[in-house]
Length: 593
Image (cartoon, rainbow, N blue to C red; front, top):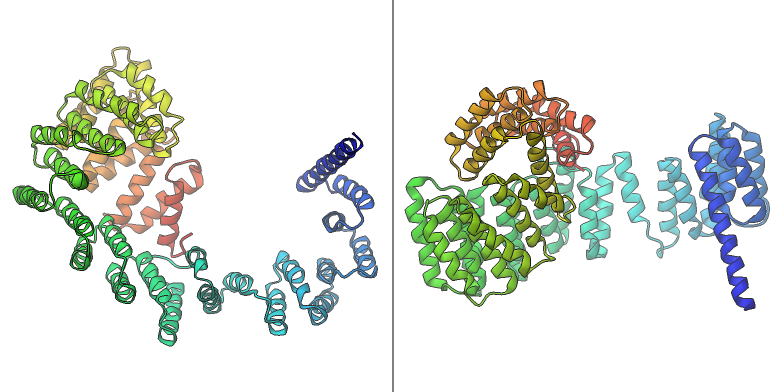
């Protein structure tokens, strides 16, 4: 019982101190320094060895310009026989606040000299200098400590400081020294490098990093440098150069093609199909297993579909058939079969064949997740074919099969979207309300957007005439029937001008113009959204889409910057905020965070 009471009292005291300390910090944060000083003085009196309370008193004095009181307290602490040489930094800083620079320097040097007595003081002394952005002094501390004791390693701290000072060569050299000592640090080093490099190969930081890697590689041909060079070239979108490094790695290691395969996928996503094709052919030639070769052929077919024109559709279909004859129509090739049937339905206009193929595939000996993927593809094709009720059955089966999987949430969203396509807006709204709390941010955002569209355009028009037209145009766009969709949207913009559906119609039509590479018309639509609906929910969408068109299609980088900047300063909660900031900094020539 005694022990219990002792522990209870101890916990109450700790809790009391914690709450009082939080109150002091809060007063300090809000500029009420007299109040923070009183609390910190009380805490320090009760806990005389707590340096954080001591510094709370010092900093409160300094904010109140009671520099003499701060000076006397620091000197008292320095003279009490305990070793706190970092307080010389605090004393020097106190002098610097009074513009007594000679006294400040004198005390900074005392702190640095203290390392001779014990190099382990360098941790606290270096941190004290960095706290006040006294980077030159911090470098002296760390470099001196490492000279005195080979057990101390401040390369991480030095690398960060060199970067802050703009000494990029020394920064890269320090980081690379760390990585070569401990390969597990490579990922962290890449994150630090990305603070300084950009997509531009001629950016100073990019040039210096490339030079440092090549020099080190010549002196010590470690594959680590090939890996980092490949990573750098990928950031610069120079996929051929990255491929050269990946081949060098594979020739030395020779057992894993995954990184080369991943490089091919990155190049293809960035639409560098020529390089992607070269990389994949290398993967196929060097694959030891049928599974790896199959992956390579799948990627080649992805490129073929992405770059296809109608005249080539029959050839692509024959190539798919030949691959399935070679590798078999089994559960092992289900992903290739999904790609094939997606092509048949969306490109070759052979929806019935795709539906029958997918029904046969769903009867194979598949895992639960594989079966769900097949049924998702089947339902998507049925929506394309406007067989909505059948599609809804398959989407519902997916939700029942894998209820806690993100694929089930996607299926629920597609139930809502399909109901919306067929004009059942009430049931679509029920599904969307559930999905607003989806664990997938993308699904939650899509659900929120569609939900607002339905709600906003049902209130003022009980017949939902405009919304039904819009849903039809949306479906036609989904079916790649772009001209028909544009005509319906033109009708909405004429017959329902000034209604809440107008901004949605302008944006959707702009998106279709983009798909059909009619960028000037897309630009005009997005500008109208900003002109007439600048305070509406779609304004950030319009800014972002305009910025992308100006940057990538119309060669107007200054206009792109203006719209990225608008998102950064006016739409901090936008889903485009992070990407807009990255693209803006890239266009401005900054390092990309």
